[in-house]
Image (cartoon, rainbow, N blue to C red; front, top):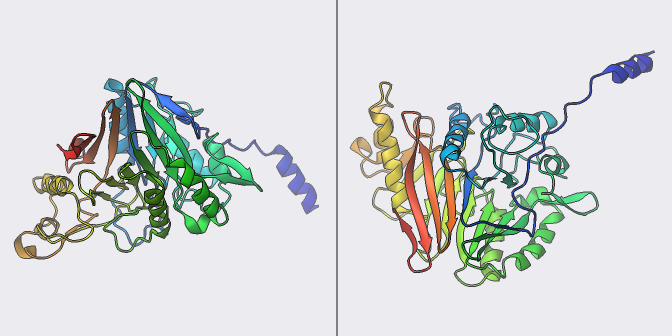
Length: 386
């Protein structure tokens, strides 16, 4: 009897809602050639989770504001594609991915109907530790981004890729997308290492690395053994001084480093995308404290904190002083409280003939996003802040 009832309910149940399918910007091993290429980079835009975020400042996130700013910019200056640095969902379930499709319907080109007729862009996904949670095979993620998860046998997919970005009259840059989740990859980890050695040997004008976990970060509680191992391999296999920029998002805040000076790689932690933010510990004012935040970024954070001071409901003077290292906190390590001053925002990356530009669009205390800091790389000068 129970079997009969179950059979009837299964027979008359409505069809399962299908997964969204997002259009990839470029295939693994492919190339994208345009006079100029612009990339919107975001990370950690998954919804708030009471279980995952119980020890974080619950500030409500800023995903809608960030995506709205990307959309507004795209009206006047369309972006070529988006890179999402991972933690797109809280877990790899069908309902979570359908939520992602709705969240990005106005921006990412795919089969989810957009709310307006504004031009949308394709995407390059980077797998975060949440994006294949509850599903180590990553099969659902591969269906959401058709063509990204290449089959590598035994029901497994590769969650890494490389492609070339060609600008101007043929200036070629190599982009590599890595999966830093060593434990989650299991047997696939060694396959990624073998592939990576070949992928970085011919970088053209330079390497741009997209990875979820942050190989360089001031968040001491965030383990990144996988990211460190991958970047060590890249540094050893790629030509000397060929790594131009590394974008990561494992830490839920924003940080910028130039650990080797202007001729070395720019490290951007672009994790302040919308999930509840982590505090940013900056160290003592005016004193080197490894890893050292880039001075231009440090100044931008000061301006960001000060943008809250004049609000009608301003943060406490204690929070302001602790973030700036002033008043009673003069001489103490500066801590930017994520509950008061979340370092939310997104990154605009522009490739032109002879240059690579990186711009931080940061959420201000007023609720608007603004260009807060900018860096440009050229062969003659290396990285320079504006």
